[in-house]
Image 1 (tube, helix red, strand yellow):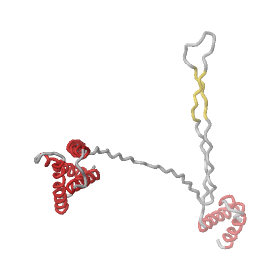
Image 2: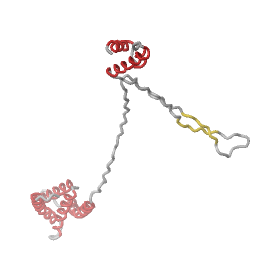
Image 3: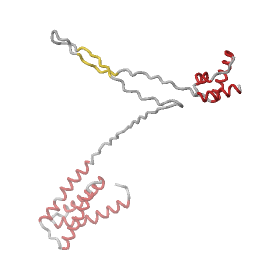
Image 4: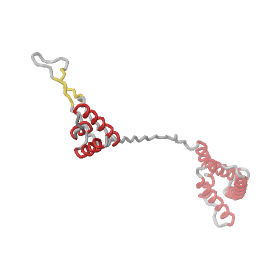
Length: 233
């Protein structure tokens, strides 16, 4: 319960008002002067235990309302003191004893179970360089079956029954050739070098075929590059 002075003051006032009606009802049902005081005391203890345990609060409120209403009805003569009323008031003490005992046991605490869920996301990233075709996916390697003999016993004259064991075959390696991409300045520098070598060895300018083979160019690109190198060495 919260340690609020106003809350405790309100609780004390309510229990005091109810205790008077509960005492009068117990006296009307035949309880002695001192024994009758145990009925409001038992109900007050039950109310405090329920509020502290935060259980049975609604049942306590209904009980207090019923006892208080019955006391005032008996006091004004609207409710006769019958067998059922006497039995009900007499059952207050045993019922309070049972409920306070159960409330004192406390509510079982359920251990908190924390489950960590880890989701692993695997993404295949394929890097393709300029001018390179995407690498095809490798097929699943076939399984190689190796027969092995079963150790005895077996019948005479009969060969042992083979047992096959499936083993994954080694996947063949794929060789990928990556083209070398040159910048225009690098192409002109290589073309001038080839032109100088051609002039030195044959006394003729470099040919379009040589530029195609050595630099991996198309015929059109090789022709334009040759014109640029020969005319402006």
